[in-house]
Length: 405
Image 1 (cartoon, rainbow, N blue to C red):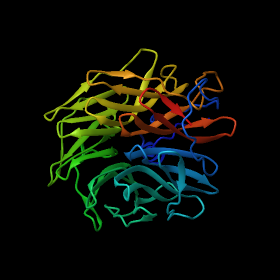
Image 2: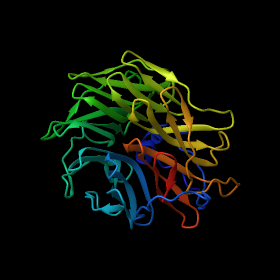
Image 3: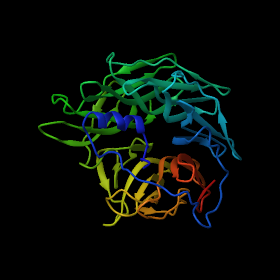
Image 4: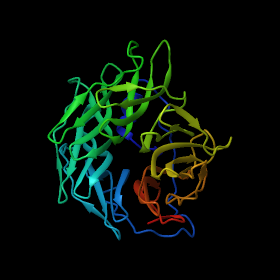
């Protein structure tokens, strides 16, 4: 049966460390949503593709990144939106070898001619290295990145954010063979990437996981990185982590005791959002507080990405489980913040919306970004049961509804 594979490589390492239950098994049926409006179609390269992140500098300039199957390897994928069509743009694949993989998890742009995409490159289970690609307006090229902590192990970059051409942060984690994960933050100064120390919650206990999943910078001296941590025996504790960069160091900030923080977005120093499974948290400049999201006893959602077009209009994207905790019937999920509350907005499900013993729909949205309040994109993937592969999703918001290509 196909598995939900958002941020696949990162989750696999955590599972290997003994933290089970983070992957949900499911199957899918490839039936497009009935009567759904159509957005421009997206390329589906290789034997199957997954989009994992998206960013926009305007309504006519967006990038979506992920990976696709290319024979015996997983190749990095970058799609460009020019206002009328998505096109596949060539990207480096340094792993190259049979069973190698190059996967992009995060993307951001300073301008139309200055973008970064980050992820991982490597072979096998623990042969992974950080991967950073730069767009100069003409082509993508690989830029050297450190792998702090030294071998052996595996390194992953999950998110990236920039405030200027000479100021970017990328976050992720270093998975070590003896069963723990270490938070990781890399800084770009315009010339090179370097490592910066981050807090390590519950570091004194072995067999634990710490993972940064997303980052957002408001200015050179104000960034937020979010993720989660979990301890091993004997405590078996877990919780979110939110770190703030003040210009000199990363410090941990208290957060509501909620689920794993998967995404973060800010419109200013006193207005940020973090999303997690079945909930959200808001930063008002002083503290984080939990804010309710639409919820029911028979359905639960996992929010994976968030963006704000303006302070009174934000979007949170993810997965809505349509049949309770058994893991079947996964639908795209989109919540809208109006300035006072979150409400669910209808979205298409390219992988169908039916449930049965053998053909439960599997759809997911991993990222969302707006070029303007009336032009947003959300990307992810769905399982095509006919082709027996994953295919990419790109949904577009035109100011009144979400449509799929």
